Amino acid sequence: MAATQKIAAGSVIAAMCTASLAGCSIGSKSAPGAPGPQKGRPAQAAPGSVLRMIGDGSTAYTGAQPHLPRPERLKQGQRPPQFVVFSWDGAGEDSQKLFSRFRKVAKANHATMTYFLSGVYMLPEEKRDQYKPPQHSPGSSDIGFNDEKGIADTVQQLRLAWLEGNEIGTHFNGHFCGNDGGVGQWSVDEWKSEIAQAKHFVQSWKTNSGMTKAAPLPFDYDKELIGARTPCLEGQQNFMKAASQLGFRYDTSGVNEQVWPKKKEGLWDLSMQLVPFPGHTYENLTMDYNYMVNQSGTQTQGDPDKFAFWGDQMRDSLLKGFDRAYDGNRAPLVIGNHFESWNGGTYMRAVEEVVQNVCNKPEVRCVSFHQLADWLDAQDPKVLAKLRALNVGEAPNAGWASYLSSAPAPAPKGVPGAPGTPAADERKEQ
Image (cartoon, rainbow, N blue to C red):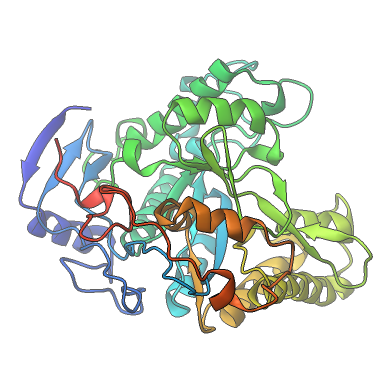
């Protein structure tokens, strides 16, 4: 989209903070409790040099994202960090205020997260016919639309989340599952249409909501959007083909074991994983919905006497998966959640306790998918191949120093992690 305005950003971002971002950061100073640069890893600077309004002003280019660490290659014999990704499907702020709650949880525990925004949460109910879902009539949606307050509250959380270093991905729009026109039946071209609409609703929320004087989202969504999770984990094959052609960098719509990731269709496959499930002989997927189904079936509010037990069971399951990786192959742990109060909110309590338990441990990095993809791209492919050779929970027999004793190949110029190479977002606009 063509720029319509280019002005000094300091005063504009200050105005954005005054209007709707109490406690947000300006320049290079951090908001109270915001995650700062990781030790020894220079972070990108906060917005502070230019603000360029995009399109109708729903979004804006404000410079490099704050608190996004520069990736580094592992050194010879260095044990890899333990990455943990907490991600949220259909992110939006409603009366439960779970988006704002977990932003605060992340900040308090030196974590960043990925929020997969549903595009229809940026579209008011009266404009629903603008959405033309594949294989469904215009204005259809299995998760509804939004109202002015819901859009305003969601936009505020998106602004704050991005300024704190979190990632804004997409969970697409109408959340159609199953055999009646569900996403699993969509073609590559239909996925491209769905992606384009999800981006458009974010890039035109001001016009559609009538809130034309509100502050913009402080990022260019064409550049920010690099990954997604499909509804109900369906349709991954054709989605990945479409996403690869559109320049996405990762997908997290499948089911993996706890091993180091590889690429499919040119995308990092950062799918959720199977972890031990206390009290059962089988393993469970690292998603709150799957714990609920295995505990109370299709009832979202089951037996209240079991709420505490079910939450503890999910928490302990995720911690067992974490320990297995942390003490073993150090494969990234990927966790998926929803902003829901299923079974009395017990899963939200479980996730919060996991964040508090793991994110402050030595050598642990609780990061967004964006940060994990950056780190993977910065590594020597031969080192990643050795990491992928380790099985679930398998630590190198002779220790990490011996297992990764070969010196990594120097990163080619322009690759993340190469000495003196700026991160992509820091490069000057063309």
